[in-house]
Structure formats: structure tokens, C-alpha cells
Length: 273
Image 1: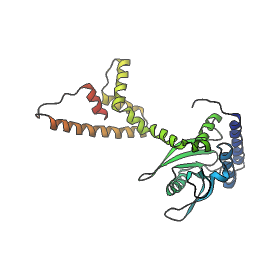
Image 2: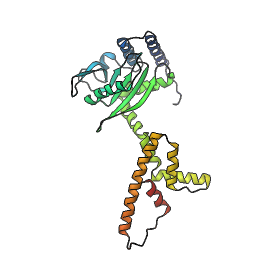
Image 3: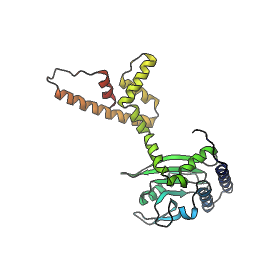
């Protein structure tokens, strides 16, 4: 993240927030004490009015009994205001866990809320809910108030600040996360254009023309296991498309013996499409 200056008031507010959380951590504060610190952070760091924009113990009606989320962030006042972020709060001494995420995810899905914030006042994790079959919850950003750099903390808290959320920052954040997702990046990397550019650069640097499939295999070796699996799926689609194209070309040929001519550029497309 690029370094930038932040105003003195915000720097002081972040320092105050850090001190509040550190003190309640040392005292092993309960959930109510943690909640008061978190609400204060929403006010002094993110610019919300706790009495207007934080709906405490909001009722969530699902398939079973009515549940209550710790609080929901909303831009308008009143019990019927649309929830923008569902906040699940844990005691400062409790480490955030998958079961906590599952709990608040069910609240968000039942209420149609796309954003989740899970925090114990030390760790902050921002998630997006994608409503599909089944719904998917994805971690977008995370930060630690006690250990992260003040400038970075300012940038992270700004993402969910009142001013920025009102301007539509969450929509932009999700668009950016989608574009930069591993699947999106891999798809661009092994696209016809991507392969052509990489082959051209490699040939310029080494004077060797690399086979498109060998290039894809080389890229796969650079990836971690999960990304390699995703790339493998893309390669499977490539193979299926190539087979379909070959069948069409064969059926359109005048005689069974005549083979279509394939130029270098069309070979690039076959191997990556």
C-alpha cells in the first residue's frame, strides 16, 4: 500500500481506539465492554452516529426462530432502514473463528444484506455475500487494530466509513475484488491475447518461440495448489472448445483426406480459448 499522510485528528482517533482496545484486552473485558469500544470506534474513526446508524440487536427472521444480530450498520435512521453491513461482535479475548462467520452469514442471507463485518475489536474482517445457489461468502479485507500500521488502518477503516459508504464505496470495493479474483486474473493470463503477449515477450528476451500449451504448463508450475486447480479447470474448457472446433472444421472440409491449414495465430487461439 502506498504511503500517504493522514490528518492529525484521524491519527489521534486511531491511537485512542488502539489504546481503548488494548486496555479492555488487558482487563479481559466481556462482550458488553467490547461492544462499547467498537461502537466508539465507529463514531470517532469512521464517522457514524451510534444512535442513528447502528441498529442494536436487530431482529432477523429466518426459516426458524427469530434471531438477533449484534448490530446492523444503516445509513438512515429507524427500525425499517435497510441494513448495509451486518456486524457480529465477539468478546475482545475471543479469537474469531469459522463458526462465528457462519452465524452472521445466516443473518445476512436471511435479511438480504451483502456485507458482513466480524470483529472482536482487535481483529476486523470484512466479507461480501454473493447470493447464488448456494450463497457464497468471501473475505475482502482484514486488519488488526493493535498491530497494523496507522496509515494502513486509516485506509482500511475508510473503506467502511460513513462518508465512503454513502458514496458507494462498498460497490466499488466488490467490483475491484471481482476483477482481481484468482479466477479472473488466470482467465486473462491464459486468454488468447495474454498468451500471445507472453510468447512475444519470451521470444524477444530468449529468441525462443514457446509452444502455447507449454507456456500454460509453465504458468501452472508457478501457482499455489488452489490457483493451479482453477487453471486446470480453464485448461479443461480449452480442450473442449478445441475439440468442438476441430469437429466443425472436419465436417466442413470438402473431403475426409484434406486437412485444414492452421496458422500460428489460430494455434494460439485453439490452445487458450
